[in-house]
Image (cartoon, rainbow, N blue to C red; front, top):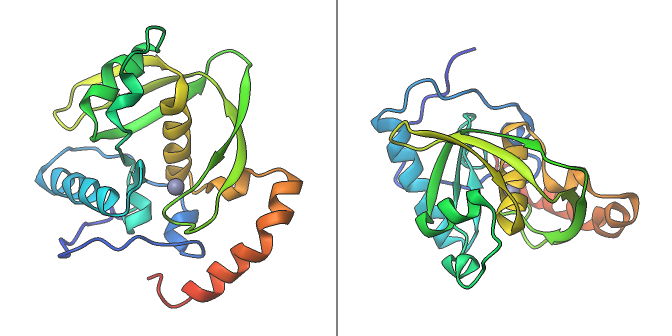
Length: 196
Ligand SMILES: [Zn+2]
């Protein structure tokens, strides 16, 4: 499979539910070059413009393992028991993570409402592990592996799901799925033809 080339458009277009690229597994980034750095910059701009807190490369049509996060900095203020990953990453927001990976830590989960720039207007409750071990590279090539909890843990799980071709609406229980099913169909129909 050919590595997806990023052809510098003036502005990125966020793909929505029904786009093929959102259902595919993304490829690892092997070399962090100017093209990757440019993509990351543009994704951070798009995320900010759309008032999102996270965006994964497949959402802008590029099937590679890269995410950007832009959690509000106040998440880190005043908290004394935040996880090592939150402590390190929250002050750096917005930031880009390359080839991020997670594995659950412990067995506790919680249910919380999520939304997604690729599923506009839909919010629904999703159950996820509370704590994960997060490993990733920064754009400068440095890598880390740290335990992550709080809202950041949920955000990275949501974004990394995108790299596996999974949307948060794929993780809903039957009740939530039933509740928003008709809305999802509407989005799929409305966006047909807008997802290349
Ligand atoms: Zn999303």
